[in-house]
Length: 348
Ligand code: TXA
Ligand code: MG
Image 1 (spheres, rainbow, N blue to C red):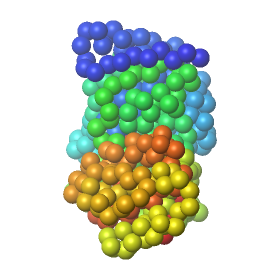
Image 2 (image 1 turned 135 degrees about the vertical axis):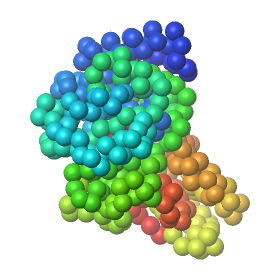
Image 3 (image 1 turned 90 degrees about the horizontal axis):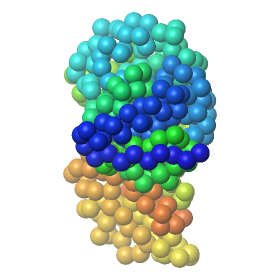
């Protein structure tokens, strides 16, 4: 299959006509990659089971892992769900359009292949002009996982999408790098208190301001593979670079010492061993490929960079990556969650 590549920077007349081409693929039951404010998504008509099947095939995704359904107007929620809980409505008012996926009981008409057989559906209204224009033109809700091959870091740049999916989808809309770099916060509104299944740019503190009590799934809070899987996506290997990634814990001094020792014991080519550090700490290392995630004072910058940095190590052929642990707070929970998952919860 040859993928039609469509490059759009801003919405203008030429872009709108290109988006018509992309929307036509969706109307014909095809698949199109599009940018959002979080990461690129791989979309298909949420009401067309054949399109959904193509998404799973293109990604190589296990079919019990449900997809998020993307909309571009509030009145598109109704047909997707059995009912809109009052608290969910509050979230929509506060955070949509934006990086928040709201899980609600699904309407019977939403195909089971979209929700991995669950009776709930995750709905998201992305805050990105191209995503919104594309969804509106397609004329249907768009089911879309992140546009990476299953298990790989989510794509935040056009080149990541091309690496993973060129030739496996009908269309690819390329645009600027995604602004946030980590996937949306996922919150389950079918339980009381509501429960965060995946942390993201909308933080726990922000959610609690709107909802009062909010729980966090033990999948997020514990560094172990849980027996009960609340969000099926959580049980699979995720975000992994090809190199072997391990997170190094301790105080800044301890981390620096542990990594320095590991680097000095490394017998292979020094350029095949990497360190994921920060602007403030990278000066500590003398060997290996040292890459900064950004400034410790700017968690959003670090979040934006995580997936692309992991892919950079791959491009450079790095076999072993030591990532400095990151201090946990309200702003870094999502970043830490992705980093630990990428490392398969291996620590030294
Ligand atoms: O920012 C994002 O959310 C991106 C962009 C493209 O919108 N999408 C994304 O989709 O990250 P995906 O498929 O890579 O991750 C969706 C996550 C998975 O962990 C999945 O298990 C969970 O959301 N999820 C989706 N529907 C769910 C449901 N009904 N119940 C529980 N978890 C659900
Ligand atoms: Mg994903």
